[in-house]
Length: 116
Length: 115
Image (cartoon, helix red, strand yellow):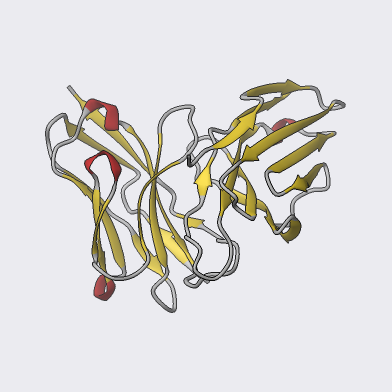
């Protein structure tokens, strides 16, 4: 069975500092990988996704993530955090392949606090 | 336009009430989903519809009854709920078929409180 681990429950950074949120997965093959962000009281917004190809993917809001097969990781990064980035971040995986409905497995989430 | 619209945004219902949550998307997606999310937890999959047919039911109690009237609409009928069913209910959709994109898009959610 697939699983996703986000080791950091809560991270606090100062505005303007760099950010890295960790995500490790367990799956027999390389799954499809996603990062979603959820602001308080809101739904989930897709930040970026990895299916294949270039292991460094760019997303919205200045985020990027790097897929490392050898480490089964898909860490999210941002060079300079803004106060509006304070939110809950979820890493998710889905079985590869097309044609069927996606069954996402989510990590437990990382709560990001941004200090002024 | 990558938008999934959910109504109502907030719902308070008694344990004997019958209510429905509604979801709509006009992206031509043929897979639609219901997720349940409790506070400080990740979303949990409840139901999946593929081509308007129920394809996955994650052992959800029968007091939750999904319905997919057409390819754009998804409903979740609620009856005789318990206080522990209070949560954020998220609707999502994704394309299906060979060569289709593989991204699930979520709505803003419906906050349900059972009293």
